[in-house]
Picture 1 (tube, rainbow, N blue to C red):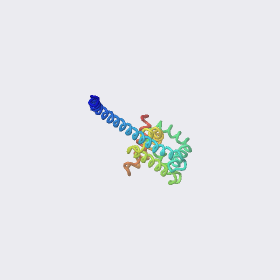
Picture 2 (cartoon, one colour):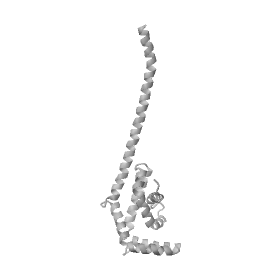
Picture 3 (spheres, one colour):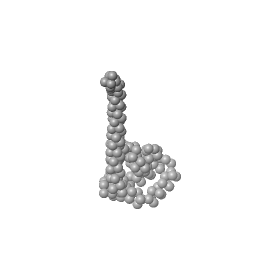
Picture 4 (cartoon, rainbow, N blue to C red):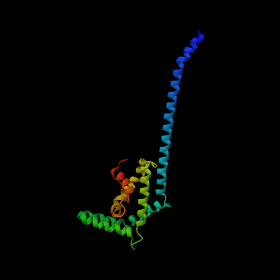
Length: 189
């Protein structure tokens, strides 16, 4: 009888043990997936931070471009203020024309070739690659928007006409800066 009870107990316990092993394997699998996804997210955030680092480093092409643009805008602060006041009193068509001429002068520079064209292109390329990085989930979109959307919105306000003019030749010119600018203008994440 003792042996029959052992067999009966083993027969009843075996399915429960198998079920426990299967449930444990499922939990282990779910845990492994969660860990994997967390690791991928950490990698995306790290990749985004490499963009942040490059953007903030004055020794990178994007850092130099950002600084050149800021310098030109600051050195023309008075003219920009006068322009904004004048634009506010003009009809929309005339205001747009005046703004376009002023921005074009900044882009071409005083000698017609030493202006902001190259730094603007560097910023455009930076944001285009950042957009690709986020669209392909190589970078974290939410982090990228948090770091860059405000700058992009300001850049877009200043140079939208230049970008629109360039799009007549290259239809996707500036799509990255525009995408991030819309996030900055909307204030959404």
